[in-house]
Length: 225
Image (cartoon, rainbow, N blue to C red):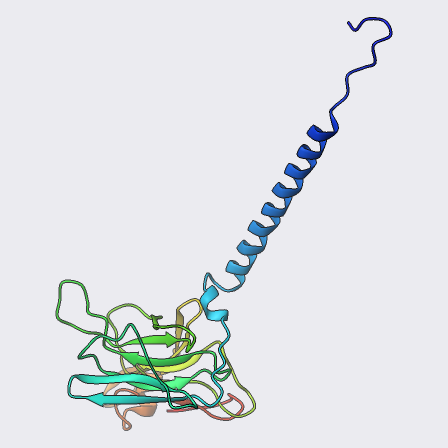
């Protein structure tokens, strides 16, 4: 008990200010964590895919040498940008700009499968502000002929490419892909001479067994392959 006439103990102003400051800092850090989590979730963990680049006037081209072929970028002033991730002897090809100009996509056989001499062709993504590109596909199947939509219906999120003779719509952000040609149908047709076969096989067997390249038609209502 306090003696008669002694005022009750109070929290010192300095201690109170420290407590308030500490609480505000914790709230700020929590807000930053929540914001970062939502941003990562919204972009499928691919924050690099949201970067901007001033690529106006830049040209993408393939430089052929005695050791292979390398995708390079020519700036308006004549400076040539080289990809720091290029492997000597690799074959880069099929460069294509994303419609917004923030990234250049191409395919290359730079990636060698572990414990083998096999080099699969994968999709690479290069922001001209970066010194090197990054691989966006994985697995044993090679890819080729990447392309984006053109005209008024531009799409910066997905591209068409070929893989194993099929046409794939690929999303570089979350690295997901779905087959768009041949169509996945459950209908079965009956051929009197050859027995039962898939609908796609029956309709297109005279054209060949695989696709080589594909493009969106204007409006993205059709795919020409």
